Length: 111
Image (cartoon, rainbow, N blue to C red):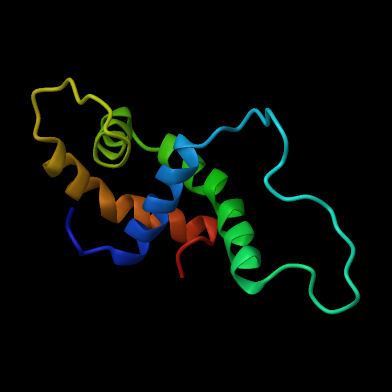
């Protein structure tokens, strides 16, 4: 993966983890409600993680708005999806990164 877009790739790594996760909500929650004697009931890392997870649907929307070939290249690189075209997926991925960065800036994900 090229390092020309480190901030975008950081968000893509988070998006890939989110895409691999379960979204139907089966089973018991990983965190439960508790009582606090005051102060913050959640540590800072949990707050940041929750805020980051709120950006994943925006990232997904930005990717889904791109041409299908770009979506396929991103899915190939980050989700190990099969790329069935006779074009180099690394080349398509590199070419679509500026457009993805522009879209993420428009959504307010990348500053």
